[in-house]
Length: 295
Length: 220
Image (cartoon, rainbow over all chains, first blue to last red; front, side, top):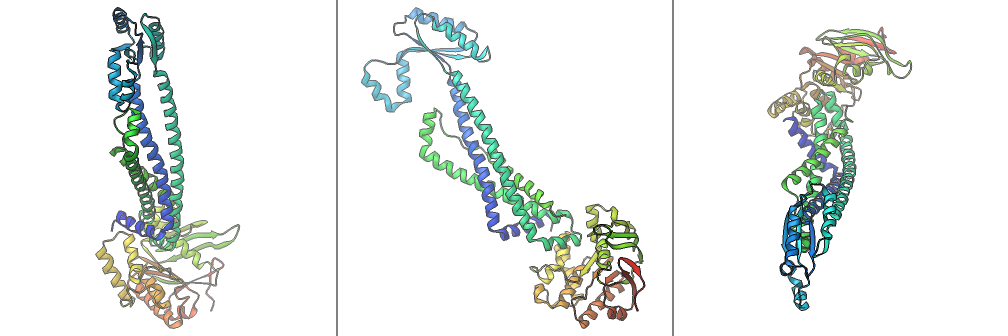
């Protein structure tokens, strides 16, 4: 039997023998990885929403109802000539109403009850943020505000940038929290593996005295850690998958609708494999550290 | 085969378990190590098995200075040594067969070879009918024969035994000593630590007598 086969066979027997302490260890690792996976899942979806909002977040220049056609044309020409402007689209009052009805069909009755169209005509401007960034956009907004026919300007990139900052900070905090949890999980795994080593001490002593290679002496401990970590991560992924599918069924379309995105996104194959390998890795490192007790 | 050069082992300040010991055992020899309790017999065996390291001096086995072995080399060296202890050191949860085949298993030998060698050595010590028994189901003499089988299954060049008959009655002790004589007759160097003078007289081999960690003349 090779050292790998021997280590897996012995580690499996040891896991079964450990019983409750192995379950506690798997549970701790599962909690750590479920937290990490949960953060990852939220982060992926929040990032998706932010990307869409950032793409859509442009300058909206609203026109007075009384704005004349020459004023509109002059404004459009001015905007197109600006280096910070990438694209300009004129949305008439009627088109704005149409769009609202398409986006919010359940509210279409409200608009038909009003009688007249409440939506002003607007120029939707997509900016080149690389040309001067937010400062250039602010200067443009100030200049446009003084143009004839302009009633209001909405420029929401700045608060979105702040939101991105908050999300990034939250993501770092989540990563640190997950790291601390994982460290705790690694300590638990190491403790369980040490207990197994203690239970096998007579066997290990004899192995040492007959000259068994260290790979045979320490291998089972390392593999035991690896199995605990791998099983823990797998349990976490299973829990996240079940929770996600339940949430997606109950809230998915509403959440996606409010967020303005097509659908909620689940972890991809890469994230799945990385988390599984992460569990295996954390367990293997903990097992290796614990196995150093055998000298 | 075995040579100690100015070998000393201390525990704590000035407590000598062995002091400036110079002994030589030739290849194929059968030697008894005697002395009162605390004379240093077990310490010498532990040094020979590299369970401990010398405080001073050297232990040379088969031309190799044991003090200079790395951990991996230590394990490789131990594969060439069989050991038998007074308390047998059998794994209680494994059967007789498993206790012996376990040595070959952890040395990575093929299963068929493990089975064949284990059966042969257990047959040699007369336990072929107790293969599936657990150690606690055996008598003391049978347990010691399992321990001897385990020490021999890897065909070592050197067999060390620390009070191997300490827990056995006189008849079983003679039986075990006969096994050691047979092992020696096959060319294996045997070093047995015992304070049983009757046995030493009965087997009639060279004696190294220790007194307070030093070589001494055997008492009449």
